[in-house]
Amino acid sequence: MASIKDVAAQAGVSVATVSRVLNSHPSVSAEARTRVLAAVDALGYRPNAVARSLRTAQTRTLGLVISDVLNPYFTELARCVEEEAR
Image (cartoon, rainbow, N blue to C red):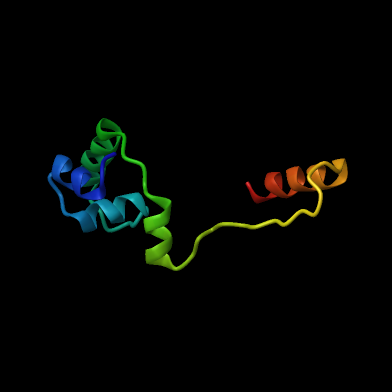
């Protein structure tokens, strides 16, 4: 799995520039943005959600406790909660 450092090396830019591109920061030139996105595609880079949550202090994760998963009411409730969360 490719890291943000791998993307930066492939694109010939800094890790900070890759981060700015991935977070849609406006201060990146069009040329750098194109090179970074091409490197992301070539390497198959996907941001690590765990690493991002450590940095931002937000997990963007919901928890749902259900008392009986065999009860159709609760399974439907869980399905609806999941759809709304998406």
